[in-house]
Image (tube, rainbow, N blue to C red):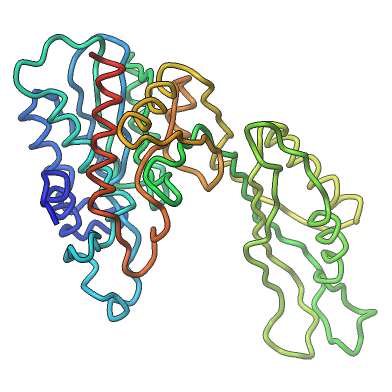
Length: 378
């Protein structure tokens, strides 16, 4: 196995146990490498969250690589073949928490920039930046979202954004994400009257009240999707009612509802239909809504064209475009009007025990990023 700068840097990052929202020194390591290239690095802390904004150049257009140093918990360490924060190279794979999501991509960002901005680099046709947070796997409040607002406040505009999330499915570069569905959460409370199960006439069972409305909502086809997005889906993620006793009718029910919705609907449409359904079923209820993501879509343009061409240049593959999956920090940049895509390692082992990424795969994605830089900024 050939050790490369990309693999060495990925190993250094994995050794830092940066459990969200901790950064554990990852951003300082990245900033040191970037400052050596001439990047201007700013460390922006909001609450417990550390963020790094590093920019090379002053002119537009501005291409920004977006990523995160924080990782999810390892789970039971005894189930790992090797310790999660001790990188292990074996059988062509790099093992460790964050190898695929997404310290491998961070290393690839930096080494692509190092080669692109190497000796005798001429003037760029624009600028390149990195926006790195330690708050992607957590609340995602004081990370990318806050940095984007700070940049907008001082008139700094991101034109093109490449998020290094693991977008590939089977082989590197087979899929490029060009958008994401919206995500709308509702925390529901249905109120009843507690009582004895033998005297139901003296009580009101919120489970019985909610069941017909739930059946109607889960049976409904919300839309048919469109050429870019699958249909909107609704899921109940949590539901609770009862005292634990078998002879007591509960006095309330709580449920968590999540909608992943496409551009055929708005969050307002969904809220109206859900609440109208509850009212038709005469529920006594309260629902608290939280919109965590609006849907976004990047149409054909310079960034997507460059990414498709770069994947083909390096791998010979024709990547397909997709909007599948959950949310990512790309949503915060897309809200500014920037072109946003996601292109990174294979996602098969993310958040799992023995998370890993192919050594050749990480070197390949670094080469793809370098080709994108050349196509857009040379």
